[in-house]
Image 1 (cartoon, one colour):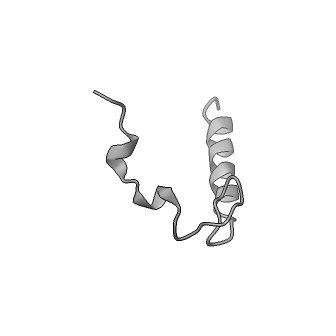
Image 2: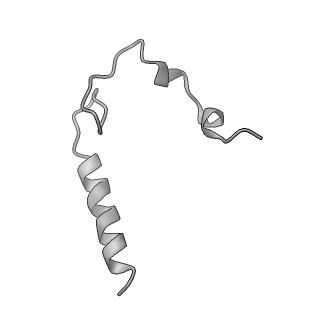
Amino acid sequence: MTLLRPAAAFLALLLIAGCTEEGKYPVSGEECGPDDPVKELDASDCLPPV
């Protein structure tokens, strides 16, 4: 029972995040552009420094 609420909240968050228009960021709603710097990011940019 203790995992039911967090699991339900996580599922709801995923469903809400999936209901965004294509070409827009899901949180801010701003349009994605061809010059957005996030398009140049890869997984190694998200790692903490060693």
